[in-house]
Image (cartoon, rainbow, N blue to C red; front, side, top):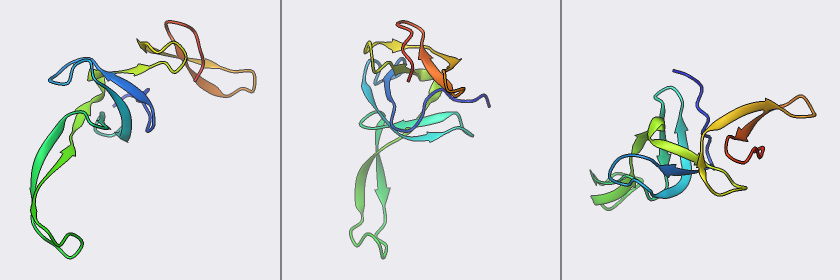
Length: 105
């Protein structure tokens, strides 16, 4: 799988699926699977049994993983969903670059 341009803590916009247009923060990135978990997006119900950590069983809501190809990174500078480029800054460090406004992040 190719390297993902989305990291934990980034804000993304959903491009496809039932939550199309929603924005949220990435709470988990799974590069091996090519998936991300986004806060308050793709919420599913799950039945859980009681266990020593959770004394109550029942139905809980949690975010499901969605494919990274269905999200676009939101630039913190211009606020638009954008593709990501890469560049080397003045310190020799590789940084991500917004394709729309050219800002580094």
